[in-house]
Image (cartoon, rainbow, N blue to C red; front, top):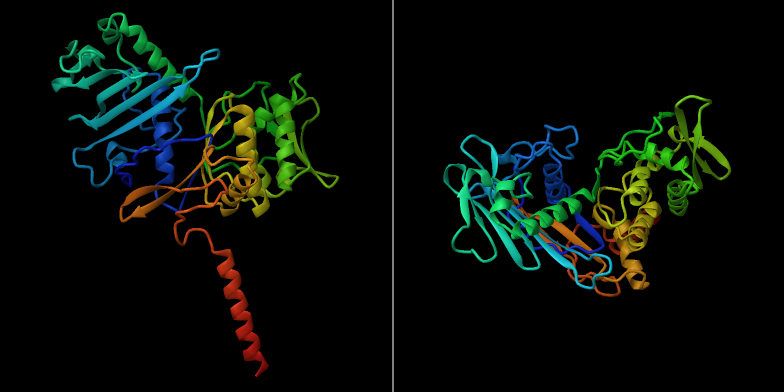
Length: 420
């Protein structure tokens, strides 16, 4: 299936970002651009210029072939990704503004290659441009018209880095380019992802006493992360935080982990109203939201967390409390949330938090993805300081007032009909 995106335009991100829209409009593929860069930068093969997924065990996504990524109406059979971000070092009042732009195409052998790569910092840009027969030209900030050199050895690495030969050619600027690549790599490493499909809970879990590096795209490592937290000297902070949010959602009073005898197996127990039950025996909503709650506190401070459908299998009140989780954790731990959701309850609670002055409209950006035929369009929802949306799309969320009006009308008509 080809990409529905022809052009996203600029997408400004806030601490809390919501991506709303009907099914199959293109929300997931929009967020997958960051995961595509992340898995490419982490590739063990430095010559890979774009890792579409499926080859490495650590891949987050598998986008298929190059043609699957292209928009159906792409004229020159190429696509580009651009990311700008600010990084403020401790003790410095001036942020560093980094730029990454890469244009990709498939060569005659069907291999995805970079046509042009731009790395920049605070307005100074360095470029690698592909020429004929696989050679690349290098341009520095002061060589916009004439390249510094041209060679096959200047082929970029892992989408985000210049080759050692290109770095050497740049002389004293080579160190700057390396710093830019390292900053981009660190930002990509800080991205954590939880997909919409999560495993059913087990009655007990084998744990090897190790702390997992990530929660995993399905959340399979959430339980090992909780088990590791339970053994630390910091007072089991992760388990306490997760328990606190489960209680605020009204689906559990606390979470506990119990070792089964002297074995390496552990049970996760959920307490509610004085009754303690195995995670396997409680509602599926608890086990499905558990990875999302765990990730919010397990991800490194300052990370970017991508969540797809965190509200799955949750009742309306619990879905609403997720909005409070995103707002509070973004402030406490400087986490940036990118959330794909269909939950009206989650979005309505964000509006309420704005009206209560617990969330500014600058700190939350809701986007609506819609289709114009085969092409996806991104609409920025205009939200004022009271949480009111000025350009709300029609026929997405239900009309609660309208439904109540129609119900009352139907009741009146039925009463009159039955009274005859």
